[in-house]
Image 1 (cartoon, helix red, strand yellow):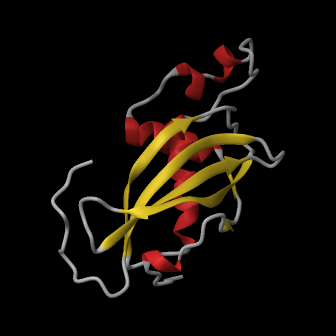
Image 2 (cartoon, rainbow, N blue to C red; image 1 turned 90 degrees about the vertical axis):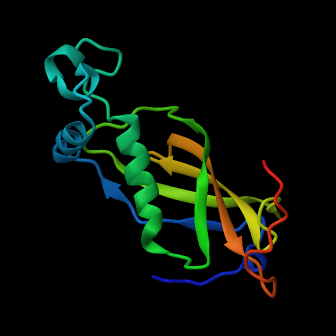
Length: 158
């Protein structure tokens, strides 16, 4: 769904939740093929039987890609991603887990490099079916401001 929103339309504390997605064996194999990461933690069921987890664990990068991908159910054509900070994987994800993403607006501030945009910080939490956080990070993105001439940045750097 496309939902155009200017910087001024965002509200601190606003929460959005995505649909869930169940992680499969195919996800593990395809992600390993895309990245070249065939580390035994992800691909060797026999080796992982005696591990603290007792089974293979998902690639962190796969959890990130799927968790962030779930948020694409809402697209803002007036905004773009500036990056992600403080990425952590506090709990493992396993085949058969169902994850969903919860997003909370935690920061709104002017963008020092672009006067025509504001900087939004969104706390990202990916949770499993037990409500455990399996990924945590902050998403920083920029949204156009209302009534500000485009391209009127101050030239300042971060």
